[in-house]
Image (cartoon, rainbow over all chains, first blue to last red; front, side, top):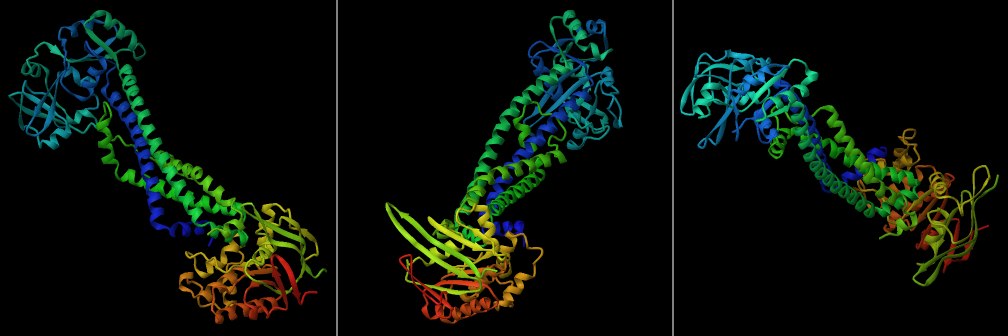
Amino acid sequence: MNFFNLAIKNLLRRKIRTTLTILSVAIAISILFSLVAFNRGYEKEMKKELQYLGYHILIVPKGCPYEAASLVLHGGKFPRYLKDEYVDEIKKVPGVKESARLFMNSETDSLAKETKIYFGIDQDYLSFKPRWKFKEGGFFKDDHSAVIGQYVSEAKKLRLGDKFKAFGEEFTVSGILEQTGDQDDGFYFLPIKTLTRVSGKEGLLVAVPIRVDDLSKIEEVAEKLRAAEPDMNVVSMKEVTGAIMGLVSSTRVLIYAVVLIAILISAVGVLNTILMSVFERTREIGMMKAVGSSRMDIFRLIWYETFIVCLTGGLVGSFLAVAGSKGIESFIKRLMPYAPGGQLISADLVVIIVSVLFAVIMGILAGIYPAYRASNLRPIEAIRTE
Amino acid sequence: MTKELFKLEGITRVYKRGNEEINGVDSLNLKINKGEYISILGPSGAGKTTFLNMLGCIDSPTSGKLVFYSDSGEEVELTGMKENKLDEFRRENIGFVFADFFLLHSLTATENVELPLIFSNRKKVEDSYSKKVLEMVGLGHRLTHKPLHLSGGEMQRVAVARSMVNQPKVLLADEPTANLDTGNSEVIFNLFEELNKMGMTVVVATHAEELAKRAKRIIFLQDGKIVEDRGGK
């Protein structure tokens, strides 16, 4: 037997209390773990998503440019539109290398309680999607062709050549995309002219993605575009990333405040449990002193007990968070603005180490006072305690 | 080489109970020699426990001087010694046996005996020694039993084994048979005799006059003072 074993045996004397204390630490640490992992995953996925878009500049209708940019990213119904003829003006602006027309509409199936997002595109759009690969088929063959994402194909059991109805007209699947890992997996892509017509918005667009010749001149080109046509919003993707990350940061502050409170409550719980056990064992501590333990020995013993509780809680909490990451992810996704696709909880080794380390630090701090109290008991007073 | 182990000069311990001051022990002057077997007799409140607590350094006197003589004859003044030094002194020289046994119920008999070894960092060196000591007190067949599965007499024998395991110079027993029947009390006092024969100084505080008489020296205490020192030189 050694100090460590003795500490474990002491904790096992009060199994229920120890288990509950470990559980409270585990809950606090699993919250911390999930949120740290989520933050890392969110930033990573958001950056990846923006990178995959391949746009340098996005032109959207007047109004809140970030709302429009987000709608382009994640789909939805647009409240305002751009005129198709703007594209010709855009193409003339020096520095613009490529541009494409985009339209978007959605259709809600009230019976199935789902909304389908339709993206109107043309051949030009393919230059913005160099990562697209067709699993089956290819691009549009006619006005009523459709390209679908992999998720749509699996969820709706749509194969190449299958037909489906949208806005009262029939479309045939001409191509199925390989998994992209982003929002494209869940979209229906239709010929832009057909989609604008069936939506009653002929000659209108929701966005024009732009790629520039020289990456260092994005802002310069954006300024020229703003001057060319005042009736459109010119948003560089750097600005969009910054705005979304700003929103994430403010949400993060709130989340960390909640985590901090959970951890504080848990730390006070640990302190209370260990302190209670010190009071209950006052005579026992007196005996230990009488048989030769030093102050440091008693401090070490009580401190080990706190450390073991918190370390176990940290490990259990991390395990619980990893095991429940899918559920936690979908829960947090609903709370967060503009959640990107992909895996949002990035539970790598760093997050595990940070969470367990946090639990250990909590143990070290929470254990100091009870250990100090116990080690300072005078043997005679401790033995006399009833 | 000196034959003295302890020297007490005017040892007084005053306790405060509200505004009242009570003398636990009052001006004790005494010498205890190495290898002595002493019984402390006296009614409740006579100061027997206080006297043992002073010798064992788990309480400090209000006034007076307590001196311990090391093997080399060096005089070590225990009064006024720092807490960490006293811990060390207790660990190396004192074995305590209490009326209430004070065994940890979550530990086996062997583990209870090992406790002082853990505190003195001698666990690894003398891993099997605790088992030997338990065999010495007749509990070789109870090594892995927990206190709740032992009789009162067996529990006290585990406590005696625990007090011996660090091979202290002196064993202090405070009413060691208070919670035991006559048969088990006999066993415990036989153990003390054997330990004394092996050279250990034994000081036992007890109510039981018949058992106390087995010691070579009996000190009678009353109201914190020594009223008789029978067999003392």
